[in-house]
Image (cartoon, rainbow, N blue to C red):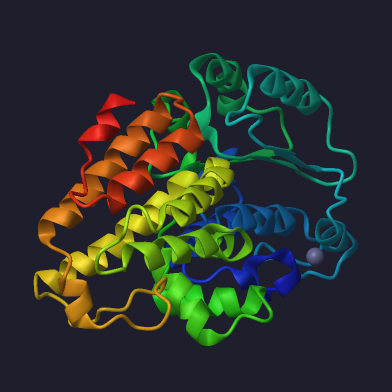
Length: 347
Ligand SMILES: [Zn+2]
């Protein structure tokens, strides 16, 4: 039986053929590994996939492949009430040692009703050494009837003591077309053109694209693009608007680095036009399509200056400088006549 049911989450996952193949082989074999590590970019379906695997291992009709979506066990997964599925999520950015200890204790008891208890440990890349060390013994040899699935962002470091004890399942960025299909399926009311723009900005990550859609990131980015697109920003005339945008930027809080990522893509598009590598002046965040001549008004010096100012702002944030102040200085720096970024270093 190879049925893939939308309710177990797998139908929402596009691409990831290698992961499907490796997991399918493991599910169909007699010997399942005791721990998988799903590693890949953010927002490409790792956690949905882990839930699909959890449903499959306890599905009463799976016959060694994917979940049926209809049996009593699958219905519990669908409603989020399966007693033998445990999810450990980072608390304040990382899995803590207390969480690992509580989980290890829970694993010393047999599963409530299923052949296998599945534990999903999310974002293990943020784990500190002490928390990781307390997990190692369980990871190497979990109590019988338990399967551990760990997820980690491939752009971040992960302790080798963790990765070496798991079977690695690699995940990859999706194509723009695949990302668009996921967005249209998941977000009713989203038109294909907007989905296409967001897919491109999210660089193959439907999770990131949905975040842009659901948060204020796109709204702020459009305002930012609007003011930066002016041929000659007027420091005095635009001061009120700049302060307002800086406040909106600051309100993005932990999503502010994502806005900076979008701004880099926007700047890269302009650099491509200025250098003659692209004819397309419009970026998905521009309102309408700016004409090529106007984009060419940007000198490469101004572009590089803007990028350096952005780097400086990121460094300030990493040092826990006041977020609003960093945003204000960044914006005034970008819109000042000389596009001076030297001021950034003096905060
Ligand atoms: Zn089932």
